[in-house]
View 1 (cartoon, rainbow, N blue to C red):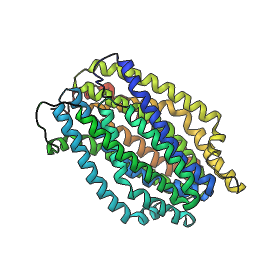
View 2: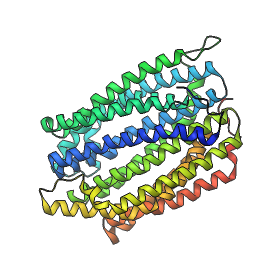
View 3: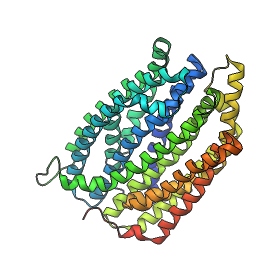
Length: 447
């Protein structure tokens, strides 16, 4: 259902819009974790390490898809909030076409450079082959990844967070079932094939439903299906978003390379812990995305006071959610990390478990900091203030990477985990500084 977020009680509108997005993230992360859990339980710790070592590379492609999603969503939201239906439809079709072209280019480049990327990460020889097979299948399905993400961004830009949730629930359940079936027969590549198939079906269905939904938006005059002007507007937000997301992923590649310089046990422990951490942070990000869409629609309507009210609601919601994650992770950290692992090799298992527990113990108490940053970044992004948004993110990333390499000689692998909270604290301060400066209020992407 299309929702105009420029009307109604800001708290009720934002909460109603956010809850389906939070559930979407829960299901998305559940099937992402299912890949690692099933690989680790059925095939062993080496399989878990292979999937984990592939993760930073898959995140590069996800970063580009997410960046496109953000750029399209912000622009579409602002035109929709301004009541300009023809421009809204032009922005939607331009987003779809440009996304399809970009995904095709990245598929070719990804397949060509798989081995060099895996080698740069110092991936151990005992998991190199499985890592390569997993990535080849994943990259072959990039067109589905991009189409699904763009459709999700369009739905949320129009105030509809329930349709993406329905697709994601169906896809997640199917993905877990296929994981269980295909991993036993195909090994690690079975994990990738399960994602390929489910993501493909979800993408095709999303495009079909979106086409039906667009017919319901009545326009008074003809409009172009592709516009260079609109592509420029989308690029103004998408390119910084892609760069921001990509730099984060490249930073994660450096960190993964550092992790890979240790044993397979450390890699496996990190693979389990980072899945849990990503689950939490991505849940926060979902609410940040809600704030972006809420802010963008209201920026189009030039309703600044309403944006501030929504921002306060988002902060309260995020602080509550972050407290829950911190408590659960700290109380059940051993059980949660252990859930990813096979116990057949006791020595390897104990070492990997110790690594995962240490990561969670150091990082999870600082989730409230991430919550505050995500709410603020969501507002800045929705307003179209991409310089502020990127600066905040880069300060976090650069610090985490640099501090990881500085701390490792003194604290070994624990030094990597220590860099997380420090980066979060400083980048949150930067983000809040941009918000209180008030410059975001003067941006208007619909001109």
